[in-house]
Length: 166
View 1 (cartoon, rainbow, N blue to C red):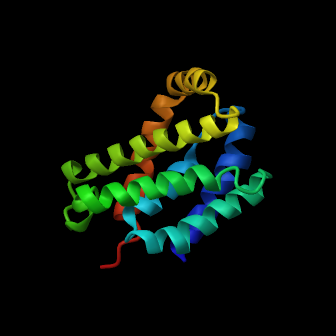
View 2: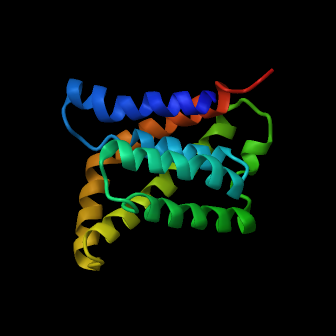
View 3: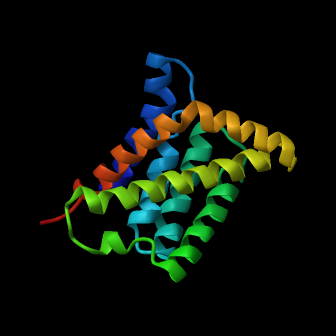
């Protein structure tokens, strides 16, 4: 329930408040938050019960066509779950450490999978043209690297330390 209210706050922040105050730009807060739910979740059940409804709410709120966001999210989620099955990417999350060395791998996972999502999103929106999508992705990479890392740090700290029960 707390995650839902945080999601709604982030959705309003990204789509209404921040564009009105700093101008239109690529903020990616909702994207990083949804991937944070997937990374800090327990696997495919989290994907089905939390991530997919949140992506559908985001599609509805932003006015995107159905499947415009869910297909890249679904593919990236499947890639993450398959990699996690073989490599155990979230082993640092299972430990209860509250240290910076435990937080850094989680931040890197969020950044890498946000870039994978962005690449898939750009590829599907450029009519499957590799040359155009690569050019668009390099522009995206240059323009939003620092903001993506900053939001990943904020979301990692938020999901790692805030909703924990004592």
